[in-house]
Length: 539
Image 1: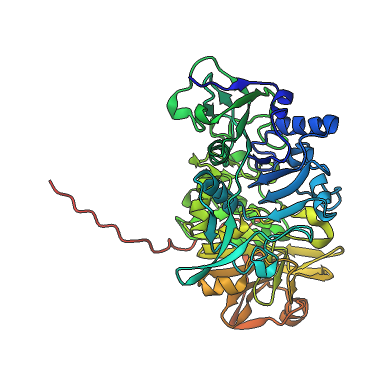
Image 2: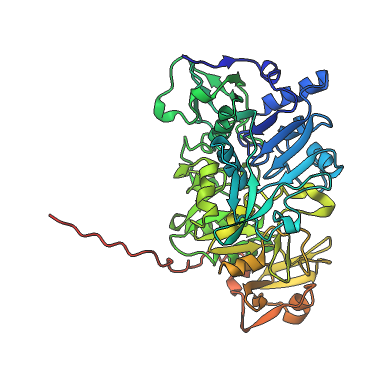
């Protein structure tokens, strides 16, 4: 019976050949096989091999807080080509990660492919299909008309537009995979892998299929190997796919977390330990975004200001009246923020990320709560590119997949940006002491992450929530529908945008209790209509 080799990280790294296409399972620090990546980088530094790698990362490998991930292999000559849904990111005061420097200097070809599409590309490669035909990314930076997902001038065209069944689609070619570097908790003697200490299984199974079916190599970094065969129901990646097991007992569960059983769903945790969102304009924005939710909603949550919404929902004691879903895999429970983002306390289920994107990209949710860097006159949103500090944003991630067909999208952000902005909230009103010098509603965004035109064509409801105004994307244009108490419409809203904004005839004031520190309660909207279910009982 076939069994895997058990090697140390350096021995495993020695198996990767020059010119290989290597796929890595990770989500920032979550589930990152960092020790194997380190061994690859160390080998190149010592021997100059492996050279000219193509690296695939459906979600970022590593972070800027101690888990280097892709930066281990981001060396001139070692990395030739990169396909990434996202990349390590951090504050502008941090130095850019090495991979960003390679991209910006043109020393590596680089593509920012939507995360869900990248998982589909792996499935297509595993099934020996030509690639992925989809409308995800149509009208955005991934469309060949707007750059084709290329991250620098050194990168050749990859995405194309194809006409099939009377419509135009984006075509993302499948990439044959030579090496998959994945991670799990436990390996048994047959190489079967279980994920009991992991906060997500991410896309490990599909990445392993892609390498195995191409005659390639699957390397699994695990916390431990056990002597007995694992119970079959616990196995997520079968041993027939695994060639090498690398045991790393001290692997980190996620960024700044060695191991927390509540993140992997092994332990229930009281939500009383969740600290309320600090009082200020960000809480006002989160409160207003939460007012868009209905009872029984299935709600996707993104990073940024929108990540504060679950905390205001918890304060209002509505936590059990909706179900949160995250692209990393958690369904239900309470989504965590900051370094644990992508994990949830007390989840109902933890799906693999590749399957979660089937739900998200197909519009199987009720609403998505996301954030924005800037918004154009057409309602386009940029969340993926900040030219002056590229590493402040992780890139597109699952944003394009999620916004493709979500029925309702709520974007959250400040109305202006820049140093010197001073806002005061309290006593039922907003006071703009000093405004930010940089408009965020602009004629054109630096990169189109969401296409307003496509959103209107799909009849999506699109809302933009800020601390001073709420806007909607309507057929006639970007329209102000609410303003904060204490705000002057002309001076503080219309004149502070770099584009003309329409004003709704029934312009309303935002609820005053949004701006009262101790006013935690609010009523969710009534449940959305669902298909009628009729059951005839026969005795």
